[in-house]
Image (cartoon, rainbow, N blue to C red; front, top):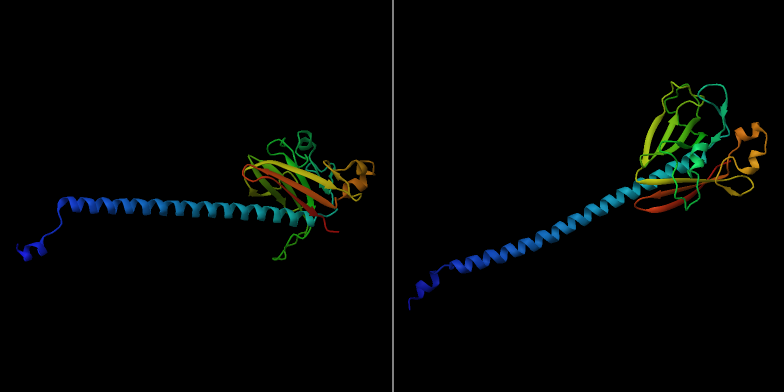
Length: 227
């Protein structure tokens, strides 16, 4: 037998096909693992971003509620006043101010809570008040924050709008007055017996905010009103 011929003999076609098949199988297994890893990473990043937005939304609500001021405002017609803390009765009528287990949502786009807020930063030193009017509503499944740069606004005053979080099914609100009793309505029954001047300037000492989200379910936070 010619030893040189044995040493220089190449692979057969069957051997090449087997090698290619094994390589393809290994590549397929590696691609599947890589694809699963990338998919898991994307899901984790989306969940992290979602959680960050939710935390930021609650942080903004907390900052607003803490700085509620006892300052009523003129209504848009200029013929009357809205209380320092105003809750739309249309929202309450269908469960917008419902308790944490609420299943009914306020009408789409109806302002559920409006109040006067202090601490409106003015780094440019503009000739304006440090108070502003802030409102919250749910529209098309999104929690919307509205702010008006002046308190006694007119119909020509355009509010600034900011979307805080989406996938919102219900925004529920409860209020604690100085008697430390929770109520689904504002004004509370005790305050409704007070003179109008007192009602216009009344503030809760705490507000309970409940969000029912499609992905996270029911989340409840309690925010204290400073002062």
